[in-house]
Length: 330
Image (cartoon, rainbow, N blue to C red; front, side, top):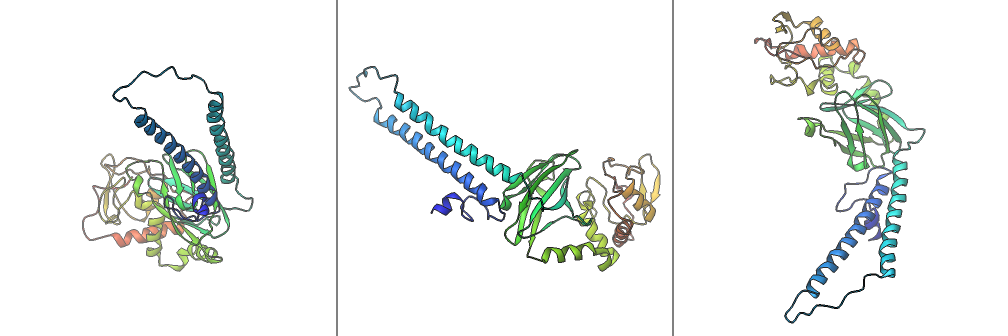
């Protein structure tokens, strides 16, 4: 009963504990919860008792004047809450320091939030839409946003931090259980907020290194079109550009390659390799009619080999039908 009360692995209110700080956070939360519940029941219970016990009844007589001062009672109801609040404050400050002081040997991952996707960049330059970490090793996340305020939240790890455009915020954790855990955006960031979901994959000892090596050699191990499809999914393209013909923030990519595209001002261009490359690196150079110029540049973020793979993927989406001349891109 004691372990369940003060931070067992899992209670009826909280998800599984999967990080080193989760037990301390849960213990503090449950202490505050049960103290609050105790005083709520005590105060409301006494109030109801007094309402019933001292209700007006037939034969009511006005009572004599009640005492207006009781030193012992006033000291008691002042000292007890003071002590409890001091305990909560000291305990909370200690947990706060633990949550904000990463170990010196923490593995660093860069996190980028954008509408509506998370991107994770590893020290070797690999970018993925899922966060992969080794078990029992501290991980430090350095986070920023490309557009609006997001909030990175992993319930199983008990960590949450705002991700702000134009600055870096940081958090750290040490995953203690191998498995897959959901990641949410906990700050409303627009119409696709509820879809801004990903996971943390916690690998067994040695598994993270094997995964990173294989994932980093994606372009060398997959056909160009398949590698391009993976890049389309992991680099945020899918958030704005569909591949099934539906509209979005940006035009659909279905049937784009090899077909004419209508630009702002009425000019037309053919969507060939050079057009696609320019659209990725200089998205404001040729803005498609009907769409706002909101696409960020990928210059310095995509290698030539990756752009070539994306072009190969777009070629597989081409059809004999009329291309998306009236849809376009950002």
